[in-house]
Length: 259
Image (cartoon, rainbow, N blue to C red; front, side, top):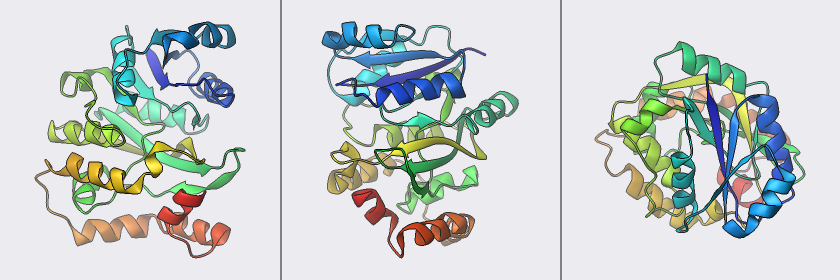
């Protein structure tokens, strides 16, 4: 199975080294594509000679991811990973086995939270039951986390590109369009990646993120469901208990905001 990982970066931060190492450890043999401004090519190729460099065409994050999609080559399964996040060597093989064995076009798993130093802060609540994804989204709940989520190449026939009109919620829009197209989702009960919290993240612009979230899910013809909300909460009780143990009675939004 040919794998590809797309990473976009604007500054080639030192922490990118850890991201690159995690790809090599969790998905050995995967082609790692980095999309960055042309001016970074010399630095990136010097530091990471095995990575495939693609100069960004301009237009923001999702335009850069589209540049990466064009460079997929013969990859049968791909993912995209932020330049400060890491793949998990424990859960990634489980996700890849699942996407090969099951009819799912997209497979996601559990995603941990870490601070800038890499220390674990907890976990992002996710839906353990993929059938609940549409109703949870309609309820205003983000039921899966993007890092470590793998996509079959065939999905691009239904969702060929990221919508570059988004600044923050292009990932969500991609998943919503996949759901609308009938793409099957699968879940693995393992940590597939770790998302790093730090100051200045784009996604911490809560007002803009909420506005884009609402736009992305507007096309879902599914009603919110109290039952799916309760299942989501019950299934994530261990995540909530761990958060209380580590940080006290704080919301996910507060933890995300302050890390």
